[in-house]
Length: 129
Image (cartoon, rainbow, N blue to C red; front, side, top):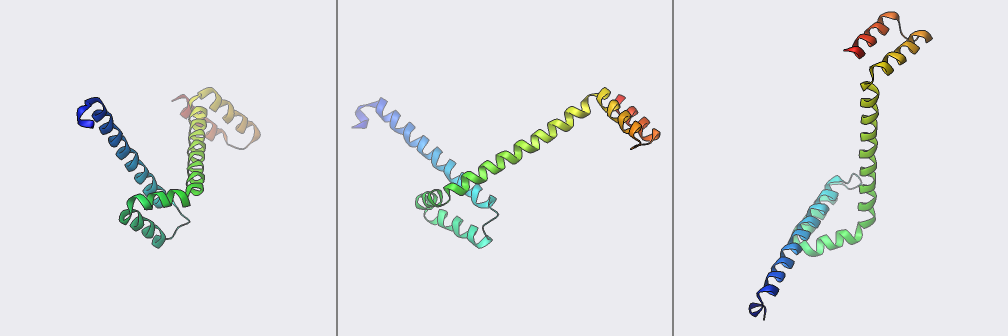
């Protein structure tokens, strides 16, 4: 029947192609989650990987059903950690980029007696460089 309708034949091939793409994406997601887990022993990881390789469709679906909450929690934790790391990096770079602010902070530390005049001069020279 599809041979008489070339458009439907093309749609069928696109559907099958994207189903394979989604399948490989799920497979890679499951493998990534299994290896990223720190609450699972090496034997547990090996068991899941063997289960997913021997029974691919069933293994991936069982993993997604059993570990759906843990996968979501791990992804949220990883996203938060990445965001915090990025925020810290931006703050350090932003505070280091303004020489007048660095000199003002160093002057305040010098006035408080936290640093010496030599250290202040070094910070000032570094900020102006």
